[in-house]
Image 1 (cartoon, one colour):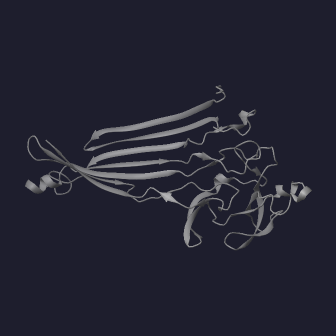
Image 2: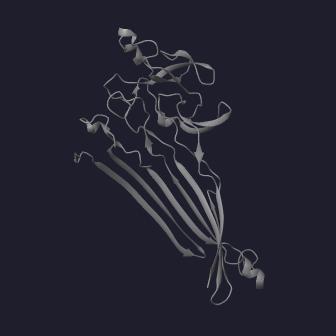
Image 3: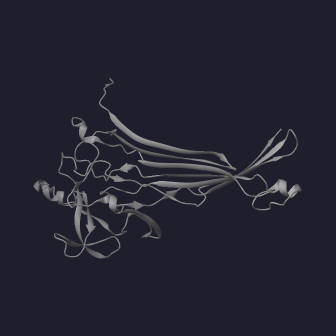
Length: 304
């Protein structure tokens, strides 16, 4: 049996602006900016009878995006800035080359710091020490992980460490349920300045002992964490592409088009999504992969 209902709803706002330049002296281009906010319900409910608690900034919306492109004729050939006195075969070879540029960037989409689910789905932690995670993000590479180097999503590579969750102390001692590793929940501790109230010394992933406090832990069973869904921004992206092209007129009815394309000209890597769970063995904020390598290709097209 299938149950159909209209339990989902959303509220989308956006601002769009575009500037276009028509061809002027061999140059044309456009730039499009979009700001948007998409509020709605998650695909999985934390508590099916309290759906309004899952009304949040939906995670597939990047917020800010900028798309730009331009085409211009290179200043080579007769009556141009460079090789302006050329003629004959040389002039035909160097004139009317066009370069195209594409630059796109977007901010990160909202994402959640997760924990084990203590009430239905969408496990979220409780914040027990005030931290604005959006103010300390910034990809850092070069963190040693065994024989390899990887990245972190926070300013200080050794800012966080996972510890035993204090909620395990509330488990009943009957049948030894609170001991012997039966409660395996983790909490997240953060390094703080010496003298911070409630701080205790802990050994971090780099082997250094630092004063720290627990900032995130699991809520009690049957309760939803107070941190909320999609409270921080994920990784943004940007890419710069370029192309170079020219059409040679061979005869009155035949022509040869030459084109060279470079995708991700600057070979800028796109980091994989960081680990933002306070549980598990992965360091908090770990980035262990990247993509978006540079791609070069050439094309020839004969028209007749």
